[in-house]
Image (cartoon, rainbow, N blue to C red; front, side, top):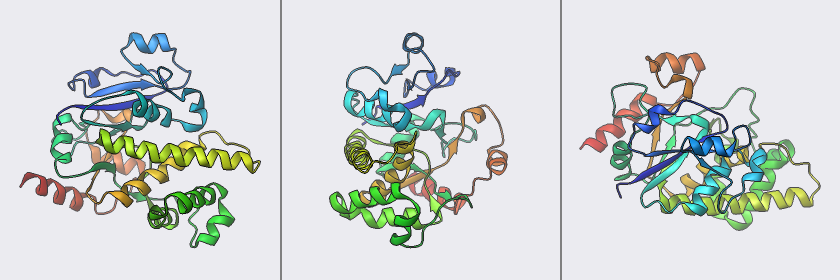
Length: 275
C-alpha cells in the first residue's frame, strides 16, 4: 500500500496551504455549522454531511462525525486516520522539528507497525482516577455504563479499559493513523459501543451532555488498539499554532506536556526502522 489519506478535522476556517504541499495525503473535513458547506467545498474540503453520515450528532460526537464519514464513504486503498481538530502527528524522521508526518514516513512506519498513536501523557491533577471498579460506579456513571457494555459485548477489552481509567497516564485526543481495514474495524467497534451507550443513557433518563461521546471515545481508542494490536508506534502531537514555529522543545515546556521516556522511545523506534 502506498496511498495515504488522513482526515484533518476542522470546525472553523484555517490556513491549510501547507497541507496542499504534501502530495494530497491530507484531506480537510469540515464538521459542525460554523463554516458553510458551500464555503468549505470551494476550498476543496470534504463535508461530513454528505453520503452516509451522522453529522447532526456533531454536538455530542465531535470529531467522530468525520471518522464516521470516512468509515462509511471513503474507499481509500492504503493508510488513513484522523487528525483531531487541526492537530497533527509530528514526523520523527525529519530534522525540521515542526514537520507534520509525511506519507513516506507513514509508509515506513506501517511496514513494521499496526497503528500510529500519540504518546501517553500524565493525567491532570484534577482528573478523576478511581482506584477500583466500584469507585468507577460511584464517581462517573458514563465510564460505568461504557464499562458494562464492554464487559458484556467485548470482554477481552476490559483489562485495557480498566488500566486506562484507573491509571495515571492516558492517550488523549482521538488521533490515529493505520490501514483502512483497521480503521474500519475500529470504527465498527467504536460506534457500536457508543450507540449502545447512548441508548442506555436514554433509557435510564440521564441528560445527554454535549461532547460526551467524543470524550468517551478518547478512552475507547487506546482500549481497542492496545487490546488487539501490540505493534504500536507512538508519535508526538503538534498544534495548529505551532506548525511554522521553531523550537519544539519550547513548545512542549510551555504547554507542560509530560511524556514518558520520550527521547528513548523515539530513538529506539527510529533505530529499529532504519535497520
